[in-house]
Image (cartoon, rainbow, N blue to C red; front, side, top):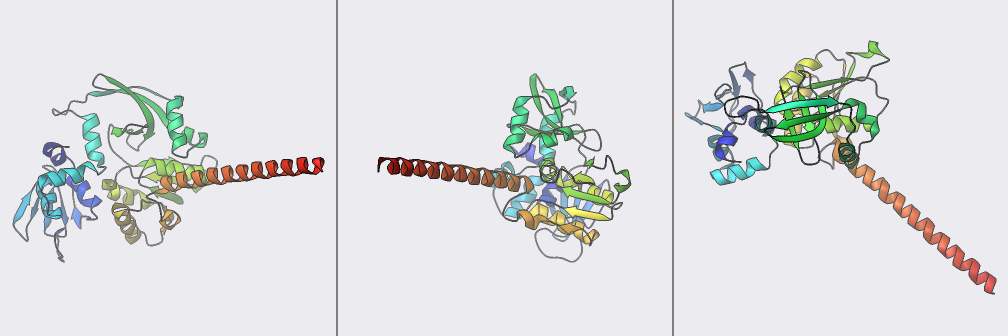
Length: 314
């Protein structure tokens, strides 16, 4: 990642990933408490349209590089090294969807039921079975002249979150995803919802709770926290399965602040980064136990055969 690429990432997403949320905002700007020190009144202004910031209390401002240099007290090289390790959705979207002149250079060529064995294998590696196949699609698309295919998870605006073993990105408009699992109980709609950051965690939940009745909400980006909270207003029962990192903790606390009755379940996978990581660990542990049992059974059988042979010789 170079300076130009990092400066094109949404600074709002960068701030949220660091645990800083706006105290007030509109389409043009957002105001934050000073990220560099403690203050009681928001003096940090983010200009959303130009993606630049200005700190009124200190009279300084700049772009993303300027912000992170001060925030990390680091050089440009160190900032870019830090940025490379992050997972900013707006950077993925920018790389996949738009060229510099904003003309799309991708094209979705086919959307169909999941059939590709490589994609099924990828899901199985993530601890997921055919139980989740109906919730995803197989998306074939091109980026420039390159032909690709991936598992697609549709969002509320008709955009797609995409995953395969070597690719992670999104196509078209970024938005939250809503999945209704009330096919036979439509009266349940608006009562119960479970919230996740990424769709692999939502699929993991379905894998673990295949008979769950209710709705699933996938944020797809922590920058969509306000959009998430707006949608949660219609539900009387809210369950949270967010990531065990700083951004996930921030999102959890903000949702609990707005919805005190919401229930947090991250303690279930407290030793893991997210629900899918926990599911993979759980599956691998069960496989190891089965292998140990099979090995023990084989050893006991061999010992029994040796004993029987010894008895016959006597």
